[in-house]
Length: 186
Image (cartoon, rainbow, N blue to C red):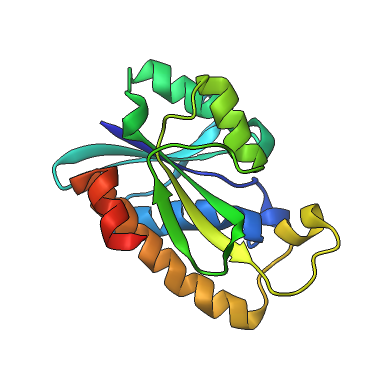
């Protein structure tokens, strides 16, 4: 059993924001495997169960807002008795160039509040994470405003391709683990 969680913020207001790229990857992964994300109000998430390469997978989009994502991840970690290596967290990364995909077996939050929440809840940095670059060459005056804004048309084309790459990365991670996935996609 593996858990893949895409971080983002719930609601129409944030649906296409840069911060919600994790949600978009979960949606595309579910779609590719004919799984339907359904609201699970008890667990405060949207969830889909599927099988990839013979492995049972739970996909989630925490509906607790980015800064509180960790409580949701902790619930599944405990309930499913998972190992940290079997949890993949997907999020945006302001420090990576737009469209860059990077998977790592562990690490710090890098200033990302969603990852900080997950690290705090799990009391560990030792879980894989897939970061998606959203960095711009333009000067960012307000970081919060920037990550909550939508991609420009030319950026959206890049991100759509990146989402496909990220889904391929997730599928390889499921089948081959973090180290092999890093060698193929980083």
